[in-house]
Length: 274
Length: 242
Image (cartoon, rainbow over all chains, first blue to last red):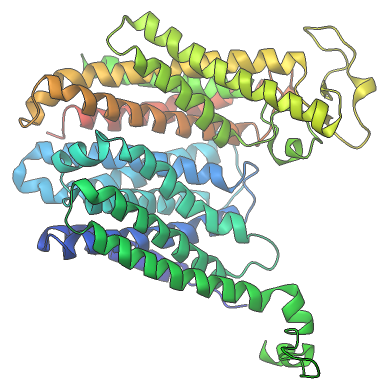
């Protein structure tokens, strides 16, 4: 079974997310687009992290840790953005990084409590919760920056927090991060297929983020159109992968197109491919 | 407002939320197929329903005295959970066709009805019997009060500070961002504590009569520490790192 290297998704989410966020000011159209793509990278990282930790069986369902991580991410992000602004204008550039670090710290504290005080027996709980909180924080900053057109607190406060979009981002990012593994879990879970679904959910979230930005950024239609096209492609990849790995296909092949035509894949062929 | 009072209020709010979750009959996936007592969903969903309703009712009274905000939050959350449990029971009774009963006690401590005769063999009870309903309403009251307290503390602290930190905002214009910031912060606190409590009860619990309820002190301790750290981070919203 093809496996995904956790370091690869970590690098994708961390580097892609931070680059996307920090490139927001370069251009009024290209910047928010890159920020939205950064959010997509962060969500894919989060979906992989949640798949790793939830394979152990949390006892509370996959969504609960997703909701908790995005809640931690939002608390860290808002505190970090406000805090970074108040050190001085010169340090405002550090604000998203501070938000990310605060979220990772809070995630680590909660996971340590879960492990030490409550006594959960999941070896990778602490590292994965920290990764998840960080991924959630990056996805929230990136999508907020894509809506507001800037990663600084005043702009985000006016066009994301006051409008209430932050609540929508909370639920939407949670869904995008937790749904892939929640839908694909099971004994024959294939991480590549799960991440294809993560691509579909995150690009769908990006499409909605574009629509939310109508009032505040000129790039809204670019984000929406690119997000919708990418959603279509990734969703088709996911459906194709699901059909290829479905029991009826893997065991008896595709049904014949016309009468008399031979089966496209037989049991024998599939076994050889593996 | 003094940041220390805000940290204290957020911590107390978090403890009330985490403690309240222990009272709510969370049935999880087994309850969804009527093979365990409780509401057939996870803590995160119940926290979303109860917590958000409580915060909306608490926020609707923004500017009122503290006790009124706490009461509004408590009533909002408790009402939402009561409606959820009540409508859930319709499905269990008339849809699935089972008698609401608990497998954890032989006699319902509140209604004094016998329980063990009605438990279908091979299941751990079904539906939401009286004791679970009462326990759930208590949990909703506690959780909503905690959410309202955290909202009130962050809002009161922010409303003095926002115009100064963001000169673009006039004093009047600061109300929507302060309310939204406080609301999302309290919601985040709600989810963090609800999930910690959920880890503590291992995903499912019937209410205060469940043997798992004895784990309450451990869960409350974890919630104190987590809420304290959340409150410390939340001070950055007001003060900045100097």
